[in-house]
Image (cartoon, rainbow, N blue to C red; front, top):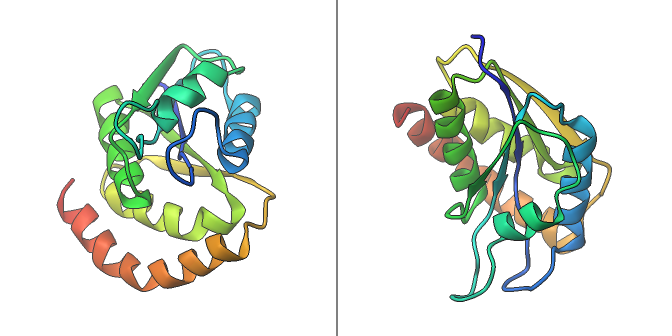
Length: 160
């Protein structure tokens, strides 16, 4: 494929906020160092409260990197939604590679779902993860969510 690289930044928040959560800010900062002038950057995340700015909009406002285009997925509410939206955007753009930007503690689940959503596309996936170890709550959520990954991955693979 000859399209752009797609740098996908998976959002993170703890509810409605008017500023980026530190976890999300770290992901965005890493994406800024990973991005190139000819990349498309996808910022994902919804607003937990009606009338609030979405995570995607907060990230766009704070973006400091270079990119040919900045795209927003304001509807992604979960890691599964982030993966589905990223795969859809990558296909629409004819991307040649997807750079997944997330936290190290979130990498395994996020990359598994993204790989499933992109199955059969031939797209290369590169991971860029922050060194943040995550709070105890975030790590526990990963453990609780992990058993759902095979079923969600199967649905994502069929939905492509």
